[in-house]
Length: 445
Image (cartoon, rainbow, N blue to C red; front, side, top):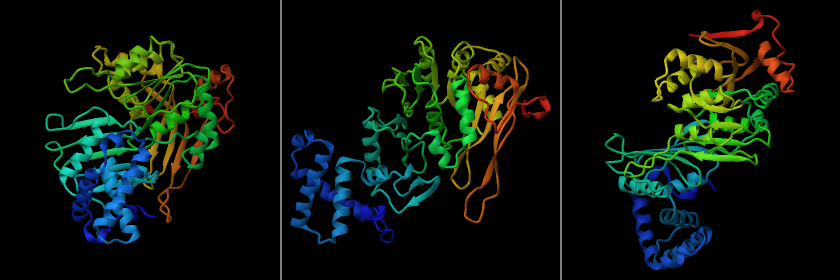
């Protein structure tokens, strides 16, 4: 059954308003006939089945007369309102949807297959939307009101939630839910066209040879998905500490410690930042540190860790190119309360960062690794980036897809030597540069 049929909201009848009153009416009748104490003792599936059965009896007794599909749709909506998130509940169950965006009560958009589309759904009122938002944030012991109009949280089931309400949002209460990404292996990502076998061989060698890797990309390019896949290349005997704002990584190794930052409580106390966790992780004897995303002063602590014996660390940063990733790391590190000269931060990055993997989401929604680059500069030299792999995209074809090919360039001798010492092969598609002229070098000022 289609999504629209499941929730019985026909586009042509102006969905939401009249339906909302009908749903509210039957929800009230349902609550009158159930024993809340008994319901609380049931498992979630049993609770839903019991409510559906009771509501079916109410509709049979009191009307209205509905077709089988309309009746099923009404029951579904009423029970979703009573137990879950109302009209958002079917969207959360749809595995093809990666993001849900609610722009006030009248507009609901979703991202599916990398493309954003508007659905013919809406909330019955602003009040109903606010009730749904309050139900979401209450599950993580947060509140949203005029004194606290922004909330960023993770649901117990893993979805990342952002809420912003009036007066900050002029379009009404805005809710964004990013689905918990399924864990993909690099082999699976090859089938999606995100990379190819030659790139997989290189990345496997770099991770196992303990190169420090920064995954860079804009919002929605799949940084966390790739970071999770790369972490699967870490040997199973190593002690790994993951540090995230919202825990999304799903490492499969046996010795993994997962740390998650904590926002302040309603009194403004109890805040634990990513920086606090990075500093603490250094006292936990990690073999590898994996940081979900650096976005503040913790960049300095992470860089210091990478350059002082914690090789093989992984992190993501929000940037549009490999060069931009380095400049962003430098800017973020300068946000630390430690007063470090900008030139010293430059030196720290040259010492700490080995590899940058750049991700891009193309116009057709496809996410690809568009560059793998190694940082060749030292000390306070200008950043010198050597590209070892690049995706050359062609203009969008008649089928609406972006086609292209991966190109490979010789590895710098220093990189090849580190791979050799770690007993990792140099993939034949790349080879080793015999002279500086063979390197695909790009400079960042």
